[in-house]
Length: 93
Image (cartoon, rainbow, N blue to C red; front, side, top):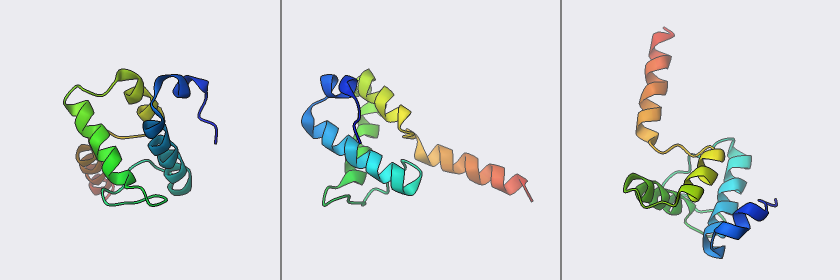
């Protein structure tokens, strides 16, 4: 899938390659919460996404990359999101 001229203009090819793999994963799985040890086409996609989260937490992830990932459905604090989901599930009973 073409991810657009905008993305190609601002990201290095290596980042774009990982991002394309993230899109592939998201389209297949219906979410962007890649497990840490997951590989996609032989690439450690889970590790790459973990590094993006660490960079964001340290304030070192470029804002344009952050926006692109958020638009793809990336959750920055997976544990917090999981806790919230479990809490909501608990109240259904």
